Length: 148
Image 1 (tube, rainbow, N blue to C red):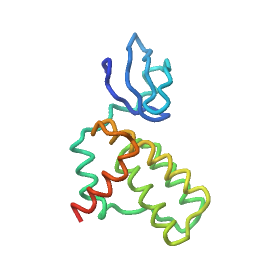
Image 2: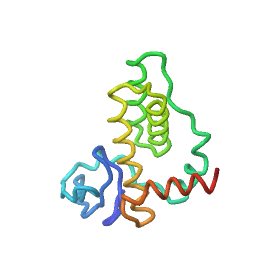
Image 3: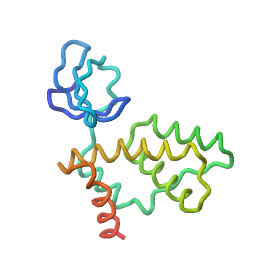
Image 4: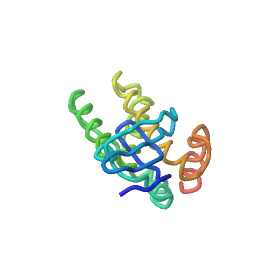
């Protein structure tokens, strides 16, 4: 289960467990610092390890982007990726939207998926590295340059 001070991924983002009692978990949202009482079924998983993040960042240039021939299918693929609550899937979404924005082919809905994926990923990296979230993008850029 989860212990006090564990960081977890839940439906709205990343949070710190304050207290666990029966099926209820009191959490503090990482970004808003709002205290919430949630059912333990709403917790997806603990955050990943630093090694997992470093592995993903080392392979970032080889991670495939999401592609679909139709707008509706593309949005469904983004939704499916986000619902997995997985770092690799978040990177796929971010990378896909970034590439499509650079090519000026992004649909209006794609930006929201990129922002949500960045929020989840950057929060997790910020906790793992114990750095402010504002410094995460620079960390990612440096990591890509070191491995590229």
